[in-house]
Image 1 (cartoon, rainbow, N blue to C red):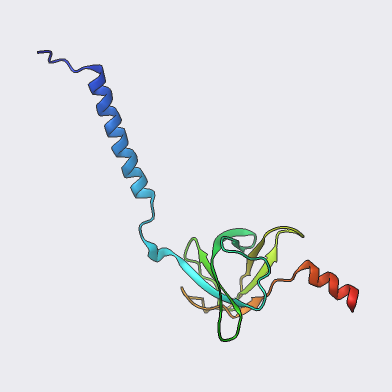
Image 2 (image 1 turned 90 degrees about the vertical axis):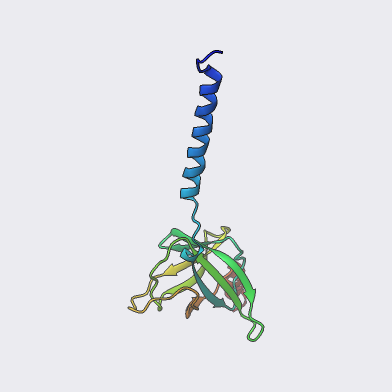
Length: 145
């Protein structure tokens, strides 16, 4: 019986140990705590072409995305749920505006940070919201008025 370890056996052990290390690394990197998600709700009269997956930006930096859009059955306003990548301290008097990337760019929500010392909590509604302004409406206002 040959007591010498073969090259294939050593290579197999190396592959198995590297696979185990890779699974441990991936498990550590995956965020298993869903409580870290920070959500805010905003109501708008007109959301334009805003869609689920659109960006949420603060000073041009992407900090989240639109995760849900629904219609309030009582007052027929669009309710937009914004999910943030990190837990931010956003003042309660911050302004949420639906803006566009240029004339034909995709819409996104731009947050102008306020100066209030009270902050929005997870799941709260925003109060300072500015609706989307379409290029068509601007042109019509110049032509017909």
